[in-house]
Image 1 (cartoon, rainbow, N blue to C red):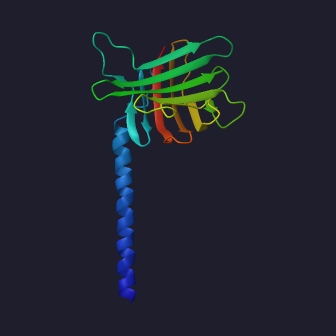
Image 2 (image 1 turned 90 degrees about the vertical axis):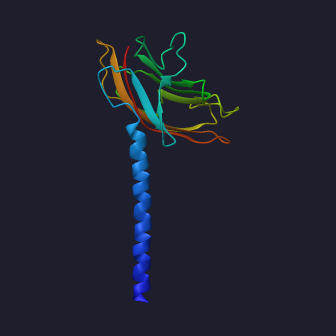
Image 3 (image 1 turned 135 degrees about the horizontal axis):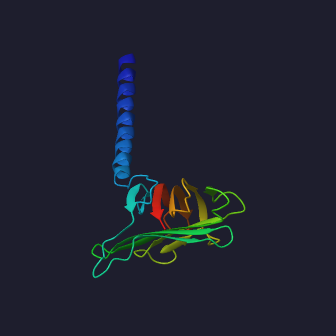
Length: 188
């Protein structure tokens, strides 16, 4: 009886360990697809969306290429920042956008959606989905949101603003959008 129990425990341990290793390997593989977390204005934007690598890119560059990563800074008041990542590829019919809006960036570096007053907003757009799931915006009253943005450097003199972010958006009737390991590095 002890032998069977011991064998069962060993088998259970192996199954749990293998499952954990497989999840860890999958995460590492997806993270390796993201641009490095730099702080020198490399014009990069990437994150994991529901565990899958998502990197701003525009495959539809003919005859010209609209930038896949945009950042707008408005120095009025305490400084507003809009960050927009675009993943566009008409060949495989993908048009997705991630937007982050922050006001008063001159006052601090870390912004938490869960704190009041709330001076940050997120959205996720996927053109392959139908309304109301096509556009999920943290400012909608029926959307549950958690998230943070951390500006890791704010050099407005040279125009370099890098940072990291994560957020979750949930709207009843739609799949939850969970964005993790987000990073951006932009020269204005």
